[in-house]
Image (cartoon, rainbow, N blue to C red; front, top):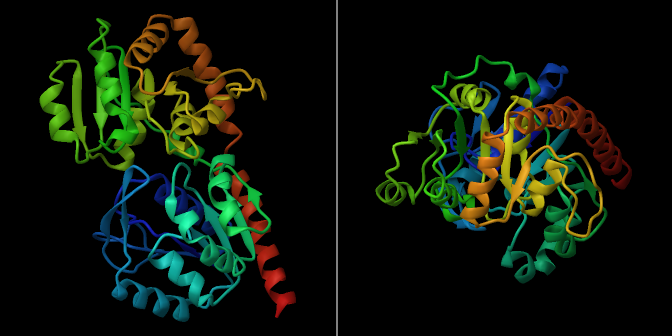
Length: 369
C-alpha cells in the first residue's frame, strides 16, 4: 500500500505525537509498504521519507505549546503533495488541529484513518461540535489512543471508534547506557507547568539523597527555574538528540515523569521501562494505565510497573524517589515488571492492528462510492 501519514506538529520539535508518527512510518516501510510522512519541519526533514510542508508557529494548546503550521502556504504544499503522491490511504494524526491534518481531511484524496491523541480540556470540541460531527463522517476509521482521548473527542465527533494504545520501538532501548557517577534521576520534557518539572525540583530540595538529576529539554520556564533552583545535584542538559536521549534513559536509575495532567497516554514511561529504568510518575489517568496500577475505583488490578505519587505534591515525590533510590530490591522489581509491561506495547504489534484498519478503511470507502 501507498500510505500517507499526516502530522500537524513540526517533526524537528520534540513531541510524543511526532515520535509516534515517525516510528509508525519506519515500521510500515520495513514491511514493504510505501509510507511517507507529511508534516511541518523547522529545518531539514528528519528522514528521506518525510515531505516538509513548511515551518511551524508555536501556539498555546492544552497547557502546552504546539508547533503547528496553519498558514495558507503550508496548506497549499499539503494539497500539492497529496495530489502528487496518490496515496491508497491517509492516516491523519490529530485531524482537528489546524494545519496539514485538517487540510488533508477536507481535501480527502483517499480513505481516511484518523488517530486522536489529545486528552484534558479542549473547549474547541464543545464550541465546534456541529462542525466536528460533520467532519467525523469523512473519516472511515476513527482511533483514540486511550479512554481519556476517546472521552474528549467521541462526544463531539460521533460515530464508531477503535481504541488502540500507542506503541514503542523496542529496538531503541538497545543502546550503550550513558555513564553515571552515582544514583541518577532523568527528567525529559518541555519546561512548562504541565510537565511538572518544578514539582521535581521542589522535591529535590526536600531530600538529602545523594543523586544527580539530569534535566533534559527546554521551554519558556527554563531560565526562571534555573535561577530559582541552583542545587549542585541538577545537571541542565538543554535539548538533546534522540540517540543521547535513549542512552541517558538507559543509564539513569530512575525516570521521573511528574506531569500535572493533559497526558492521554504515557508513552515516555513505556520507553523508560523498555530501557530497563525504574519509573516514578504522577498518578494521572494516562500514567496509571501504563503503570498497570489499579484505577481509582479499584478495577484492573495489575502488578505495578512504576511508583506513583499524588500529582503536584513535591513531598510525595520526594518520598517516592527515596523509596526507590533507597531500596535496590524494589527498584529491580520495578525494572523487571517494567520490561514485561513495555513488551506488550511493541510498535510492531500496534502496526499489525493499523494495517488491518487501513485495509478496512479502503474497503469501506470502496463500498460507499
